[in-house]
Image (cartoon, rainbow, N blue to C red; front, top):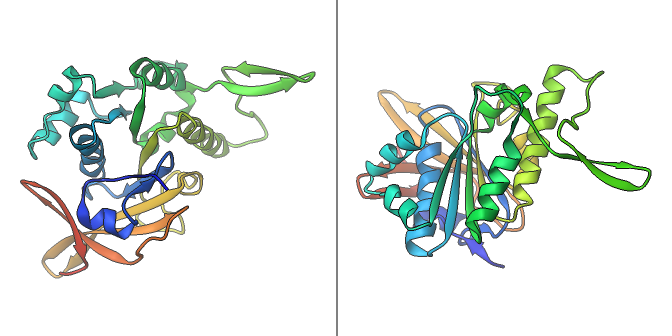
Length: 253
């Protein structure tokens, strides 16, 4: 089985060398747990070590802010952009009827041979779901047609429509064929891993990041909650960020 590595020894080890190629992975957690940095490293490693093209789709942060975060670790994404290995896409959040999948698909095919993709974040996307349109396939008299507004309306509630949008959106992005990381926020409590309550089901794998408090000490943790097509080492692992990069190791505090 082909695998797509993070380039983080401890993380790759617990998922048998990397994400199964073409699968989707959800990285979720509360703010400050390291979701964006982990996702940036995923693209950085692919471009610098594997010569693989990658796309970062941002619903919230600007490309400039993302590149500034990466530079804290010495990851120069501007250089990778100039070399055609990385592309940042900022999805507008102030324009109704944005054809979000078309924006992503056009960039994907224009760039060509994209191996890695990050979509950050599904939580922000779910808040603004009513502003976006998706090409939904319908069959009329045996003929396939695409409608830009194919989501099923009433009697569904607004919450149901948002869940449907997230499910279809994540599925269509995954169908492009890149090994894709979706970023999502986790609720403070409840039975669901994510705020949108659906992305943990549509993605092939789920990695949850947390901040654990032990007295005056706060420890970042990483846990694999699901991983299709491969065995994974379950339980908590310590996630640490250093000037030289990221380390995942056995849980300790």
